[in-house]
Image (cartoon, rainbow, N blue to C red; front, side, top):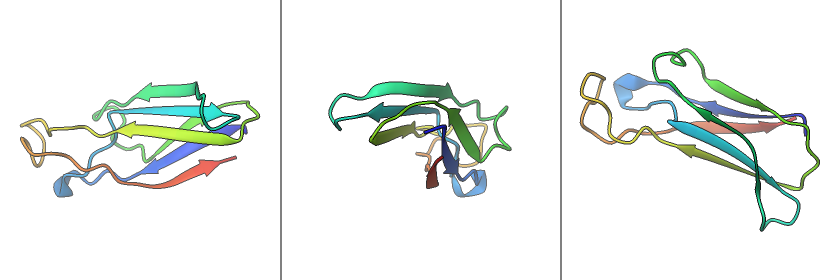
Length: 94
């Protein structure tokens, strides 16, 4: 595997926000997973980003992707004070 990409949606007017963090893990047995990459997402800096790619160079059988949603939306953003949504539509493995 050379890269893993997570595709997300950012539609703040509908309370859908980018993930807060993303972690990618790999395993050869499905039980013991090793961290392959991680990223903290900046809602302002990454606002135009819909795809998050993790370059890896591994031989593995299982992949696990953990994406944490923003949680409670900050008061200065659309939907402030409410729980945010996280939408991911594809995980690409090349």
